Image (cartoon, rainbow, N blue to C red; front, side, top):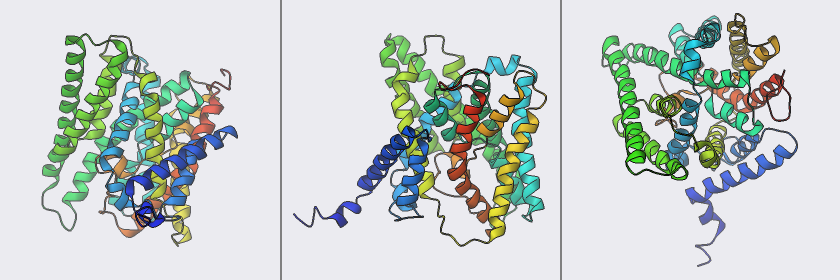
Length: 402
């Protein structure tokens, strides 16, 4: 009996290790919040301590066992991103909506050019640039929720997160088709690969429409009260994610569209935020704990890689700010704030969701090194800069309107 209760046996339990990591992240986050530090840094510290940088208790092998749990957490986050996309505003906002789209395109193009100038192959630079179009939904959503941020720039930032992920997904489909069709192990031509990637997007959209239809039909036929609808919505999200997983459809697009449909097609009172908030908050921490755990700061990398990554990180912010210049709805200060708030980036896994632990291996060693350091910088810097941007905009509950 004593052997069964020994520390070594406890540490070998993947569920116990993940639970301990989540507990540590939540406790540290609440302690940091008392000192006005974003509580997402609790997940950063816990991930670094228990992950590859520290004790190496949380690694890819362990997280793979909880892939479905992590996918469910991602589903809640991505659904919330889609739920904040106001299609009517984007279509009628004119110059403002166009600047958000311009920012997504310019951010990716500037990243690709800088990476090529730094010596990376153009194919790798364009591929990474298509990924870095996207703003990290976990960081933005977590910071907005923690700061209770609301206002014109926060509204635009929330829309930008959804737009950027959709544009990145489309760009990634094209660049991935090119990369796979021109690799040493290529088995199909570019157009065949492009059709395959496009098919994943179409199938994801079909699954989203089906899952939302199931939810809408079930709640109306059974006349489900408002307080019960969040549970049925969660069931529909899990159906969506599961169907995407077994069919290799685009889970990101499908989950985003589920949120968009709820925001723009659902006419009944929206009571989901309060009921799902706790689950979403835990999802933010869990996903960022995973990201931090996979970062190894002990890697002895050449100095140029760090310099290159820092340059790319800064260029993305500058490109976003430049794209916002024509807009007239926001003050200069709010434009600065929005550029900072949209500084975060995602990994390749973050854009495919259901394979979030499987890094794409088609990049050369130098490109992989730059991407790894970019993800490390994202974990260390992006939460703080996003928080700073929200505070600079003066749209948090602690600040006044600017």
